[in-house]
Amino acid sequence: MTVMKPRHSIMRKILFTMLINSLLFLLGVGVCLVTIHKIHSDLLDVKEKGNVLSE
Image 1: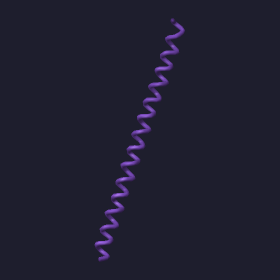
Image 2: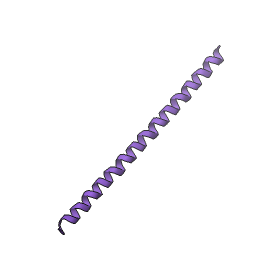
Image 3: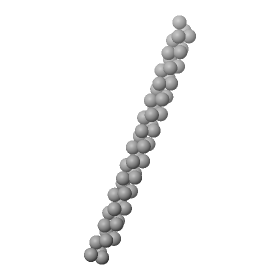
C-alpha cells in the first residue's frame, strides 16, 4: 500500500496540471476570439462611417 500512494499523488498532480493547462488554453482562445470580434466590429464601424462620409 505504501508503494501505491506516491503513484496516486503523481497521477493526481498530472491530472491537476492537465486540467489547469486546458482551462488556461480555453481562456486564451476565448480572449483571442473576443479580441478578433472586437477588431472586426471596429473595422465594420470604420467602413460604415467611411461609406457615410463618401455619400
